Image 1 (tube, helix red, strand yellow):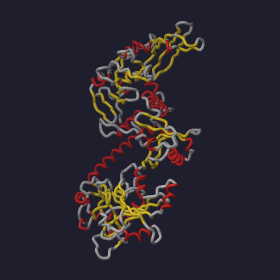
Image 2 (cartoon, helix red, strand yellow):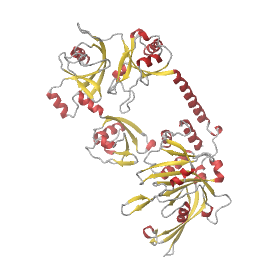
Image 3 (cartoon, helix red, strand yellow):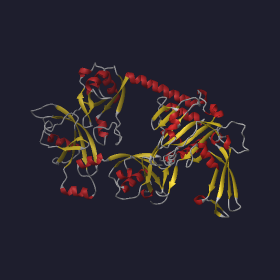
Image 4 (tube, helix red, strand yellow):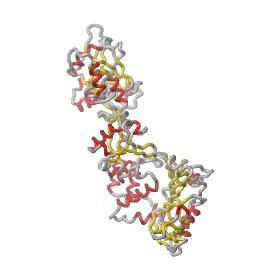
Length: 624
C-alpha cells in the first residue's frame, strides 16, 4: 500500500518520463528534516521505520521485514581465554569494507571472518579486552538486499577520514548461496540481480556529491538521478564508470541494491489502477483534469493584474507594490483571467463590477518595468482602444512584458494641484511619508500634479495629510530605485526635476539637531535615506524546527534586517514562538555543513545565515 501511495505521488508530481520531482510534501508526510537524513544509510533507516509505523496494524504490517530483513549468526571466540559468544539477529543491510578488497566477493569473505586484535580487541565482562576471531554466518538473505560499502578509512597523520578510491568491482549478477550457512534453507535460488547503485563523487566524506543509478523495472533501461537531472544511461556507465581507481577517479560505489531474481516479477510488478486506493485515483484524476482545463484556458485566456490606490496604501515597502521579490512580503494584487480576444470595454465593465465602481469613472495605465528594476504606471489606455482586444492592447502598449499589469485610477474625486499660467501637462505621482518616531514608511496614495508647477506647491496638501502644522518644514526625496534616494529641491518644478508619470515622492518633517541626536541616542533611524538603506538590508528569513515537521511549529518566516545582532534575532524569534530567547539555539546550514551558531552578541544576522536564507531552531530546557 505504501509503495502504491508513494508511486502515485510521484506520478502526480512529475512532468515527464525523465524528470525530477520535489519531495517537500513527502518530507512533511513523514516528518523528515535534514538533521535526521544527512547520511544515506541513516536515511534508509528513517524511511524504513517511518513506513513501518504508517502500515502498523494493517494488512501490510510485516511487509518491511518480509522484503528487507535477513538473519545472521555472529560467533566470537577468544584466542587466549576460554570465552565464546553466539548471537542470532535480524539485519536490514550489510556493511562491507572495500579496504584491501578488489571485488564484492573479497568484501563478503573479509566480512565473514575477522580477527579482533590490536586496537580492535573484543571486550568481555570477565576478561576485559581480548584477541578474538569473529565469524559471521548468514542464515538467510532478504528478497531486497542493501549493501553499504565503507569507502573511508581513518588516517592517523591527518586525523581525518580519507577516501580509499581504489579500483573495486561489483557484478550485475551474483549468487549468494556460497555465503550461506550449511544448515540454511537452499530450496530457493539465491541468484540476485543488481537494480540500484548509489555513487559517491568527490575527494572526501564532506566535499562530495551523490547520485543514484536505478533500474526501476525488470527489463527497463538504467536511469541516472543526479540532482534535478534525470537521464537514461548504459550498463557501462553503471558498472565500469563507478569502479573507482584510475579508470574513474573519485567516483566510487557507496551502496548497492540487489533483488532476488525469483522475486523480481512480484517486487517490481506494474502498479495497476485497481491497486491504487480509490481516493488517490479520484485525486489523481481531478489533478489531471484540472491541468488539462488550465492548459486549454491558458491558450484562450490571459492573466491581467490590477493594482489600485488602496493596494498601494497597504504596501509597506519599496515601489508601488511588491509582485514577486520574495526577499520582502508580497503584495495582495488582484488577478483576472480574461479571454484574449474580448475587448477592452468588456474588461473595464468586468473590473468596474468587481470593484463596484461606475465604469465611466475608471481608467487604466500600463504598468511597466523600468530599466532600474522598478515597476511604475506608464501610459494611459485611452478610450480609442475600447473596441480593441486585450491581446492587441498588450502587444501595442505593453510590448516586451511577459504579462499584462495595469494600474486602475478612480477619477470620481481626483486631487489636482494647478499651476496658474504655464501648465505643461498633468502627471500622476505617488506619495510616501516617513515617521522617524514610529520608524515606519506609510504609503499615502496618488496625487495629480502639473509638470510645470513647483514641488513646494504640494507642501500644504502633504502637511494636511499628516496633520502637521501649517509652516512645518519638510524634506522631500524621490524614490528612484532601492539604492538611489534622491533629495529634491522644493523650488524647482516637477519638469525640471525630471519627474514623470508613476514617480514616487517621499517626505518627512525636517528635524532639528536636537531631535536628530535623540534618535541617534535611541538607536533609531532619523532620515529617509537611512530608512531605505535599512530596507535594502531587510530579508525574509525562514526558520525551521530542528525536529522537522513533527514539531508543533515546524516552520515560519520573519522579515529581519541583515545587520540585526544575535540577541535581536533571538528576541524576534522568541516573540513569535512565545518562549524565552535565552533558551533558543540556532543552527545554520551551508551546503552540506550544519553548524550550531555560537552566541556572540555582536554577530550579525548576515553572519549567522552565511549566504543562506534559512536557520534551524530548537528550544532547550536550560538557558543557552
